[in-house]
Image 1 (cartoon, rainbow, N blue to C red):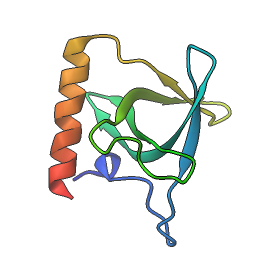
Image 2: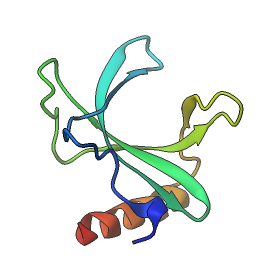
Image 3: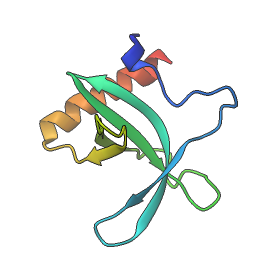
Length: 101
């Protein structure tokens, strides 16, 4: 597994890193970052929606987005995957990464 394919986040305390997504309908969704990985020179992030106690809402359904960082500020941002073909390719790569762990 190359450096870009390592499972993140990993820290010395093994704490979960959380993000809050602003949804199109104006609601917010708290998520745990499961991993950030590279597929065909594009970074992707996998998020698990969680409840108020940090428990997964559904263990079977993770959210996958394109992941970018602003080159000047380092600020992260997400973008939707644009096609079913891209989603299938990225989903397959995520499954391979999970099998390696």
